[in-house]
Length: 217
Image 1 (cartoon, rainbow, N blue to C red):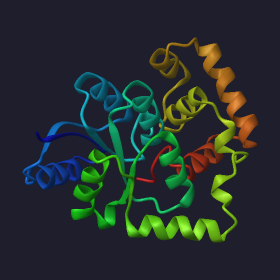
Image 2 (image 1 turned 180 degrees about the vertical axis):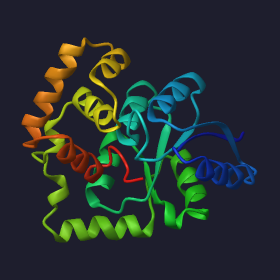
Image 3 (image 1 turned 180 degrees about the horizontal axis):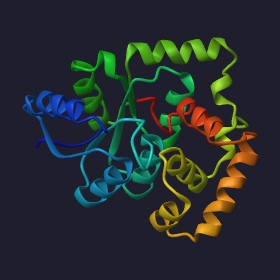
Image 4 (image 1 turned 45 degrees about the vertical axis):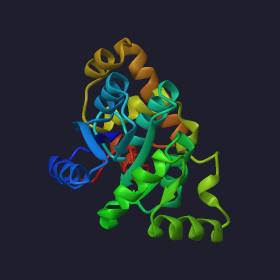
């Protein structure tokens, strides 16, 4: 029986390349391809794939929070993170959210298929670069495990509102999307800034980029 796979990446070229790579494998089948974190959650719940290959930086909902939502509802589905980020903190957060694999985009190729096969066998998989990054983090006294980091101070809903804010959505648009009142969204915005100790959108955007909630492109 073939391993069913859901691809989630906001770059169509990356998704197309991955689909060609994976469908060339006799034991794999891509059942869907999406470009946002929310679509990844929705399609995962609908299709119940064996494996989700997930980017970290995506519109509407970042890949780490999308992974956590999928794992809450579909514990038998495996998530492999495919990312350009080499930070030990990203790797820790990905595995903490429930991912079972972490592969860098630069070294994708056969490593993606290896990570998918490891996931089906119930094993974790890290590319060599990811392992090196984790070891470097340990040598720096494991600072990426600090649960008192600014990112850890935000609730899941606050991270969601933050991402929509830095994507340029208005308070009214955010309220409609997350089913809150505009006044509540404004309360979330003030609370987020207070927790992060920042003032103004430029500082919020810098925080979002540094923590993988949005990209620089």
